[in-house]
Length: 136
Image (tube, rainbow, N blue to C red; front, top):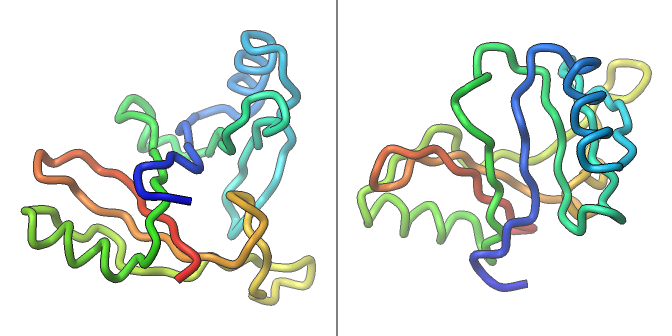
């Protein structure tokens, strides 16, 4: 992969039921419910959409825009570049983890590309929040 590939998106929603009905009917896709770290998601069928993404129950973020995840080769390098160009860190490099059925935190292949990976959230030079994703 190269820089600038969008590899995941998250649409904040208040009601997962209502939003799932809206998007599944609008786009003629299946949306699969999934829970990660006490947050409910409605995962888009990647076979149909060609890009991974989800509805995310996040009532306080509704109306603030869709979160886009950009693939970068090395996330620490990308963060350094963002800061040097006037960006700011919102969430530093963070390993994507899951909680199993017993409540234990586990490293697992993530929903973005079925690999172990890291993400970070940054503000760009204009104050827009974006997310970065990398295997390193």
